[in-house]
Image: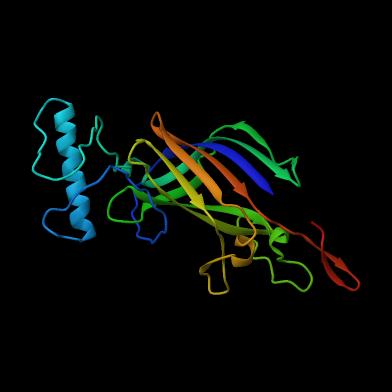
Length: 249
């Protein structure tokens, strides 16, 4: 199953949350020689940032480059972008277009320029101390039969939402804003989550092994954001036979 969607969202209350992530955004800025023998990561980062500030002032003609440090001169004309706090908060669906395919064919579950529903789309929270590393949590309703729930010999369907036959799933996208690009951030996710019997969100490990990464690219637009996202998922549907269960596809 492949779902491609573009959404327009509007911003509400700001939230913050901590989480761990294994994603990296690396600034390649030439060679920096540490003069005092310090090897701490924070100290080195401060020296890089300081030298970028010095080079920036030099390029703009507002100061002289500090030649006391032994390093390759950095020619920087724009500051680094590390403030992506405008993405943090709760977001609500204002307009979206969605295309879903099954086995490579477009499915009936399509929406073209669907007007504002103002339903909650998701929540963006900070991962670290700054707002450069972010997490975007999105919850959606899926059919229980696509998760092997509610059928004969299967776990019962929780019937989430306002109807029957549905289950909530969660996507937890992580992303790092680029030093070079402002007002835009690319998120990715390699796991889908469902609640266990205790109500805790747990990743679907087996499906994660055979699914591609999901992507969610968001950028500022007027007073909100536009997000283009692609979800690629493996889903089976069980069909009952006299001699047991089999995959329908």
